Length: 73
Length: 348
Image (cartoon, rainbow over all chains, first blue to last red; front, side, top):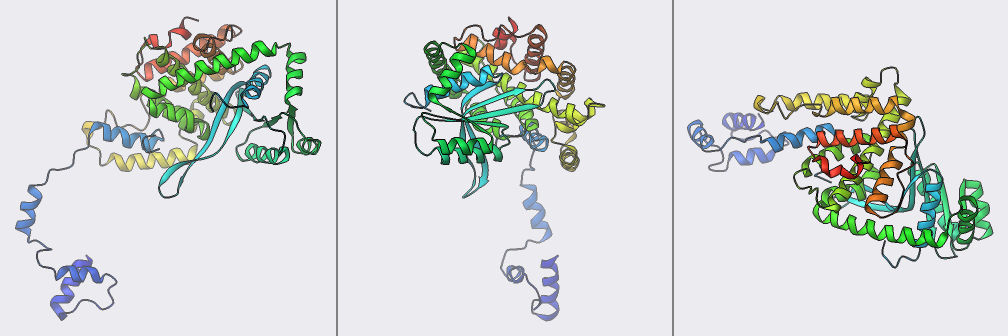
């Protein structure tokens, strides 16, 4: 939302919000190629494998919740 | 501790004293803690030269510890350090054993409730009060200690994580965490345990001994906190108390939303073994005075069968033996272990 606010401010006034604490987000808007259009974004997401939750990972999370995990010691 | 530890004879005799007082005794127990320094790491505070544990007939845990020194100087400093350790870690009684103890240190020891023995006094007390043959005792304990270290090293080389847990973590954690962690570690190692390897059977028996300590301490909490509904009290205390259980339940519910339903078989708030564990705990509570002797019996079986000390477990009562075997059978089922892993105990 910060990026959107900054984008609207840039379109309306040509300047980012002066009161913004996140100057970095405004700077990033001006970098070429940082934001993709919807079509390019969909194509990029389609090539990314979705994360899978394996049984050992689920068991490990379960151990941490129960207080039985010792792996991180 | 190494073979050139010049305090060892005193530690052996102190261990024997603790056993004569009804405790199960262990030499060189590390006191550690975890903290963030450059990263999350274990720090060693100190150690107990000898630590003794036993359970009252209502399963309340008692712990005593000794500082053993072969030197003659600095008795006051050592006394005050021991007092600090006893206070910081909730040890009920302390003993300072030194070659000689200055009179001013003895006066101070009396004021802070620590028992002092010079080496000669300890030997005399063991000889007169318990009719112990000192030479024979020292030979037996030294040989047993070598057996213990050898088997322990062999077990540790194959099961490092479990070995480290017993060595550095067990005595520094709450009992409910120890119960769950030991069962989890046992289950993860079940396929590697070789019933033909004596070091593996020794290690499994050690795990069983430590698990019995943690489980009995938990049962003691149930007796002290909620005997009118012991099942419910146990189900709360196994997670560390009401607030801790509730926090874990809420966290579980939140995470559950993101775990696919296909993983429901492995993602559950209570482990599969919980009903069996609760049933076992109720059995221990119902026979509390006999259950209180379980650690001494299990430790006796280890000393007798693996360390070559004769007749250490023979004095245990029938109910104590049966309950000990019940714990072993439960662990076998919960961790999918082969029955032969506990053959020394089950044949008793």
